[in-house]
Image (cartoon, rainbow, N blue to C red; front, side, top):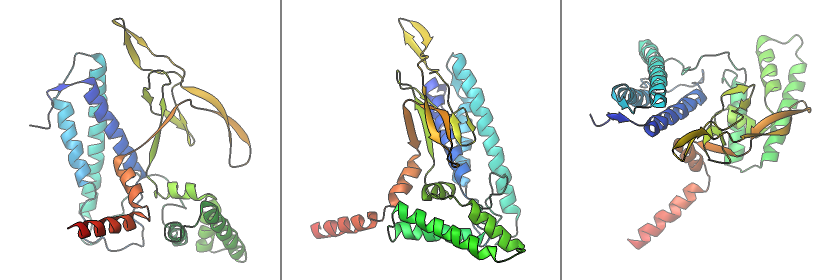
Length: 301
C-alpha cells in the first residue's frame, strides 16, 4: 500500500508525533453543540475524516520497520499507544452518535469533564453576550478597550439587576454566577470561547533551535524542561545539548499580586495550518479584496 512506509526513520516518526499531538490539541479545543441549537438533523459523525487519518497512520506505524535505533523503537511504541487510544475514543463516540434517535444526534461532548458555567453554552445569556461581542468586534470594529468596557458594564448591570431578587431563583443564581465569573478581558473570552485558533508555545533552544513542548501545566502556566534535551553529534560523538531554556520573570496575577515564573528564553508560537487559515478568513477586509481581484480578472478577460 502507498500509505505504508517500510522504513520508519526517526524524522518520520517525529513528524507523525508532532502532527498527532497538534490534532489532539485542536480536538480538545473544540466546543460542544449548544443545547438550544437546532438544524443538525441527519448530520454525519463529524470526525470521520480524522478517524480515517488515524487508521491510516496506525497502519503505517504498526507495519513499518523502525531503523535500528532505540529512540525509534520507543517512539514507535508511544505512537501505537496514542493512536490506538484515540481511535478507540472516536469509535465509542461514533457508536453513541449513531445509536441515538434519528434526527436528534447527541451533543458533541468528546472530552467529558466538569461543566463550565461560562463557556459550556448552557447559559443562553452568556452565549448571547459572546455573540454580541463578536458582532461588535468583527462588524463594527470596536477596539479592545471598547469591548472590555462593554464587558465590565454588562457585568455591573447584571449584578445590580439580579441583586434585587432575594432570595434568587435557580435561574437567576445561575446567571449571576456565570456573569460574575466572566473574564474582564475580551482576549480571554475569545480563547475560552474557542473563537481563536489554539497556539502551542514551544521553548526553542537558543543554541541548537530544538523545540520543547510543555511537559505539564501548573494551573494555566506551562512547565518546560530547564535544559535542552536535544542530542548533538560532533566529532562522531553524541552529547546532550544542555543549553539553558528558561529565565525567571515576574508576572502579575488577577488579584494584583506578583509571582515569579520560569518562561522560555526563546518562545516559539505554533498554530496549525487550519487555524491560521481560519484566522485569515475572519479578516473583514478579505471579502472586499476578493471582490476587487475578481473585478480585475473579469476586466482582463
